[in-house]
Length: 395
Image 1: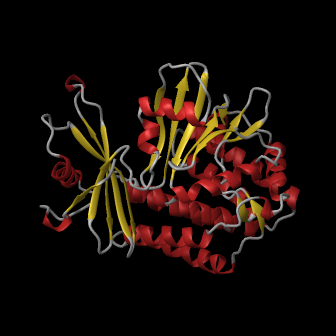
Image 2: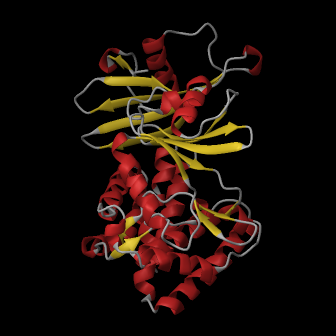
Image 3: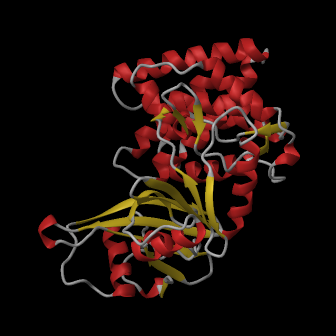
């Protein structure tokens, strides 16, 4: 399955990626107009890398009585090159996604790369999909359940390296059950447990000492045990800054919060450098709590050379960010745990509080990209509030 090329400039309209009607015309230009028009076309995500690539993802929804499944599709354009449109699972950057997403071919792949099983049906569920980046699918074969991660071919070895690294920590990790190298798909075992984010939302407090001890066990692993690729905090910060600056250009209130945040973060990012082994993307939604209290890392592909203090800052940032949404009760619960986790970490490691605050701030800043790339009518207010959290965290 391949993407369909389209002549971007010959299409009617302005080419506004935020315009779902225009995007639907592009889709129909490439694949033909269906007999039934969709009830709605929603913009799911829009991102631009200046001078390189623009990408937008949409979902077309039909009325229930039409019996047509929703269709997700993506518009992709490299600067100076032809535009492409592709439907899920036809992702040109993820060669194995089509095979892993189709039940018939997925069953054959599981038999070949994961386990020898008698013929039976397989259920495939889409858990997460980021066009051009990765997809996570759940494969269910009776009692046997696996997560299939489809990725870019260049991401397979770093994931395997990171798995070997975190397996040496005190955290539990899913078992690698199989790997299809040609298709860049890796299967991991499903571990039953409660999502840590939901656990905290329910008013339960995870064992802070166990979380920090698990992090310490990662930090103690020699960097050469995993990937040699250092975490690119500066690159990710600058990418987020470009997107946010572009979005904020016509919004004075947003620009004011942005200027204040950047003035604090720019000196920090210029001096920042990796200083040991770290998880590099540590936060509550990446973990499970087992019935016996053990903690499981389910997402860890960034593990390698990084900044241990940034792991704690990232955890704090996600607690603060998620407190911004939802009910007042849930916000209070999360900020209470934020205070506990921060206090225990500072006492345990003897860190400078301002240094930790800068790391929480820069992780919050990176999270501010989501109101920009996942547009809703109130995106500007959510962005302004998010940047306000950055400045609140830094102090």
